[in-house]
Image (cartoon, rainbow over all chains, first blue to last red; front, side):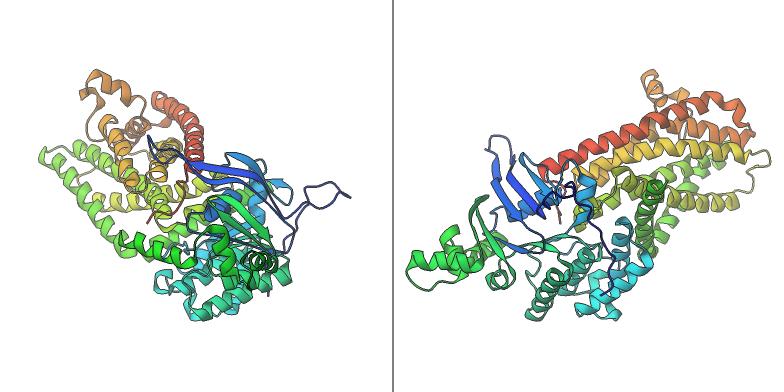
Length: 286
Length: 267
């Protein structure tokens, strides 16, 4: 796959141990929700450390703080306290340098919907300083790998299905060769075939490009299959962190029977994913 | 030097993207051009009714200039509003580029598009009113004033862009307040001498006042740039102040948006 090469200049001096791909240290974020109401603590004292080339799952119920955490890492929200470093570079002090290293895919594919995938991705290529001709070739190759045909590349995004749009969003993120990729529920709402395409692509990214990936998802099978480690967040706080197997083993021990990641989710968040779905449906009705 | 070239390339990305948007929505752009021509014609006919070719030219210049400001402010405000609506603003903010790079591209495209739009209207109006005598016109004066005024309008455009950044539902419409304020005090359709004293003070703070003065003097009377120092100097001063102030204010607004979570998709 032809993608622009990226050289990471380590922030640490020669000979020093390489910094982690992502360091989140005691990060907190609260939002004011209105006069007379107490602020909402969206993320509270969260710490994480990711080495290069791992996929790190983040699980939590709706409103648990997963997306806020992703936005804090991406620099889209200011930190109230704590610090975030990407390859040893502080997201606040070295903002531009960090931005060159990361990209993000969110749950909803955000594009200028009147423009085509190629027009949207050409824009992305230019703002990331890529050579446009090479980037256009890379766009075709990445989209082909994700089973998006060439006949879709020049159609307005609004004519593409949600699954196709999400694949274009993944292509946009990958086009810039991020060494840290933030995937915020990237497969939510996709059909099984599209989910599989995206999962395989994520694994390929990790295996062939050593990309470090933070993956938030509600799909527990996906989390178990893809993640090297998983952090469970509840009410903005980290309530568990281990390998998928380690989390399941702990849950088995607590329950006194063979457990699944579903049991882990229930045990640490006090609710099932069915509760989340029911809550979403209720919110939609209201 | 390389950094400037990189910045310019990134700025061009915004101009190119907005050109793609214009191309996709060309029927709407054509309809807006027809509306703008009709609007400028209807105002210019007031001069015909008064039997004064000079008044026709003065109203024409005012109508064309008003159209230019409308196009520039409309593009800046709507692009940011659409970015929040579509959710792309977060991706734009994540890109490894400076705020000024981003804004120069957006505002630059709006101004170039505004100039082309305005030129098209000007040509139609000249064809419509053959009694207008432009034989004495000094195009250099006109171009210099448009160019000098552009610096100030970039600054004001950046300031106006704060509104759709913070208020997605009605921010774009709120830029009309800025626009109509300039319309009221800058002598777009009447001399500022008819305004109450306190409004005349405000008119001296508007770059549009000096641009309109200069363009009218250049087109109607053929006055050279050297004789218009009283308009040129304040225009340069306003440009020097407004661009950095606009960037600073937008930076504060962006920080507020990042603190309160207002960069998120709304729609």
